[in-house]
Length: 95
Figure 1: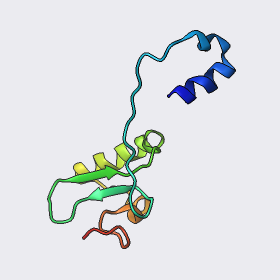
Figure 2 (figure 1 turned 180 degrees about the vertical axis):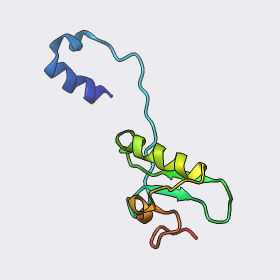
Figure 3 (figure 1 turned 60 degrees about the horizontal axis):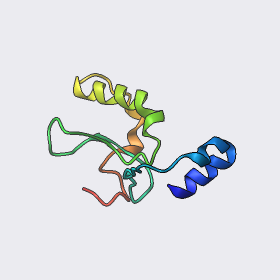
């Protein structure tokens, strides 16, 4: 955080007068093949997973929300859009 404050201060000099009061960090979710997971969980009825977006979840949230809602309501979930993101895909290490 200190380094980020130094960089920000070089752009906005007034920030150099600010003290760092606290910091926060969050975990990023990554998968072994670096692709997100978006699918129902095989063998557990009603359990859906949307994870591993590696920081891109906010940008993708509208379509992810649409797909999850469609899955949850038994509607056409547009599987060609996310078929390669299933939890049981080869190389993910599950199933």
